[in-house]
Length: 247
Image 1 (tube, rainbow, N blue to C red):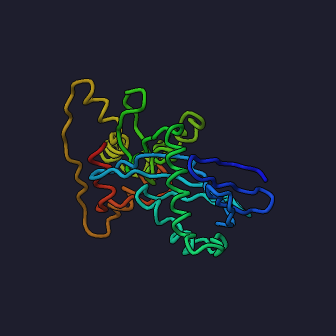
Image 2 (tube, helix red, strand yellow):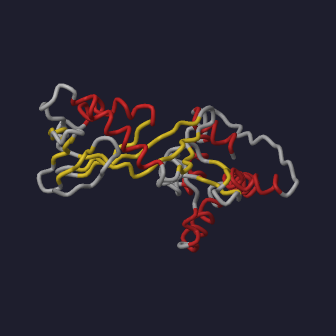
């Protein structure tokens, strides 16, 4: 039997061949506990505009591997979530205490992992934030590991500069230069405005599009922001408002 984890007071061992997690008490009595084991592969703090949440990413390892991210506070009730979403992963009923034992298994597993797995920072919305090296960086959907936002920057310019330049030149021809140049500059100013601020320039202005109903104001705005990904821009959504504030 392959022992993947050994804890202090009691032992929980996972048999890789039989796909069974065993509980062994101090008397050496062995009970089947589950047909999978849990591995904590990531600890992170999800930082939002109003609150921060302590999160963990789990790997349910059994017949197949399944990743699951939950709040740390939900770890004690993980089995209920697993039963709802992954019915193929289940506890055995050799003992009436299976839920308490599984909860103990998770708590000891977390304590065992907390000493070796650092807590990372993940941002819920796009915007300027400090990196672990204490430098400013604009996190967006491009950094999927560290940012949950759908909004992403057009950073493909490093790889396909000619395509993007030609695309922007095409946009210039939609209307007059007096209209299009300010719109193009505005669409990029969301993340460059911070650079002006760091340089000591507090730029403040309001961009207003005036036109009759149906004159394609919103359509034009969406085209301008299409450089930044496939997600449609909602100019009145709460998430978008938060991202604008962070920008």
